[in-house]
Length: 179
Image 1 (cartoon, rainbow, N blue to C red):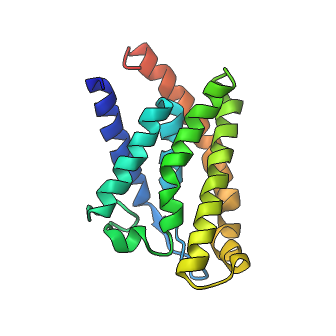
Image 2 (tube, rainbow, N blue to C red):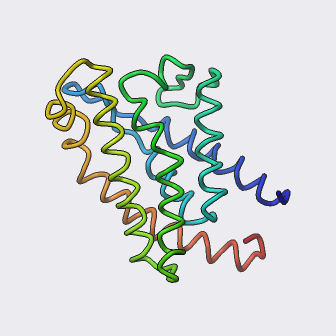
């Protein structure tokens, strides 16, 4: 792997950790609002699929071993395997899908990145809902009501914003001969 790719993987793992610290706890759900999905999607737009997957895998491994990279400066297996673990575990797949779907469609534009992000968001919601239902010992419908419904609109805003910013970053990195 090229040094440039390693640097970008480390940089985007750090970006994800920073965005994860933007947390708003919600009183009606154990799942807080965070900006980490913005970074996950941005990773998939800016990097190629293997590097995007690696970024989020590194982020999860850092958190698993106790580095406080998860929301609220937390880390450790208790967080990764807690009620929000399913959402976190989806991150590598989300960033991979964000990068892969435009590649698969042979068009890397705003629309295809949106499709990739929506596919990733669906994976996040499915894994997160199932995990939340099991960890919180609640039904699937209750998990959807507390772990998905309050977040859909804001997550769609994150999708649109990260697609736009990601394409601008792609262009800037190419102009600087870094991509």
